[in-house]
Length: 484
Image (tube, rainbow, N blue to C red):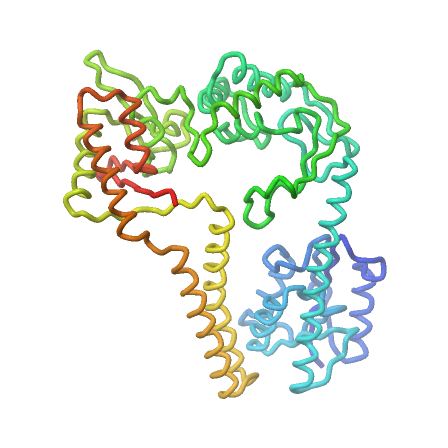
């Protein structure tokens, strides 16, 4: 007589016949016929949860932990179908191997499989079919959402100023007032995104998720067509969050009420287009109060270090903006008289050595995504190597099969590494020489007493992406870049 556990999972796409009660009833019937005892406390259930990610299923994780424990309370796990166990083939293999080491079998009560090699093959086919079904279902959902958007329907939660009610966004008056202030300050008062965010936080206003406002939060609100009565769908890549080409967007008229006039919204877009610099990071014009504005970064929290004031002698002071708003615990108070010599010294060291380490910034989002994809694939090869080792140790694969699989993975690693080097390759000597000339020019401009703050700022930002200031360590870390 064996002791078993029963795992039940239902996601939103399941039909009535796969309800929890049906799965439990059929599982207990199978257990009784096959002399398996399933105590009531050994029935684990995840409701309304996808099988794509095991980490998102609490009951499943509890079951696996129990099965692997030293007490070894069970010999078998019953599921209605293997798709209930996992719809991701990689995860299915990993968890089944873990259970196999603990002498725990996974049995589908509706999908009997033979023993031995043929049984292993059949299981892999089931797992592949389950994963294909899940991916295909995801595509069907995406197509359904696209169709809904093309008809003026809503697929996502509305922005600040609205809430969903009976499937339609309705105005939240207190939130709408915040959005009105943002548009008015931006258009009428000519305030920057930065200044608006600071003012909102100072007044105690919060975002829709109860967080503090940032430059990008304000920019998102200003550019959001939702406030002009439009619905935009398929704007971002789901995995990378990169903006797609506008030809792929779905733009329709929504059925929601608006509280920002068309004139005000249009004026905001006109100002944004007029102040945006193509291919360059946008820094608010009002932050050019000093030649270091927008460049200094706090080493403790990664936030911006901004101008904090000026002494009677003309020395400008800087402080971490997050520290000023109580979200950073480490003060980075410093001043121009301390920073300028350190920056000139850092530039001089680069010029003396004739070499520079820098970050290559690409404006090509597709190329950036490709390199990230290659890095992810390289990381997954290590996981695959561990799995083929386990398969060999557990007797699933022969030594010859293990060697063959290892060679395949090695070739794949070499190919991916070679491809990655093409993306991360340092520019040629000619480009480095151009960068050194720019650094030399920036050094001369910053050092000169005749240069204006704007000239110094433009010179430094032409070669420096950011300057991380570490007050405790008394150090500056300067990040150079080349626009390719």
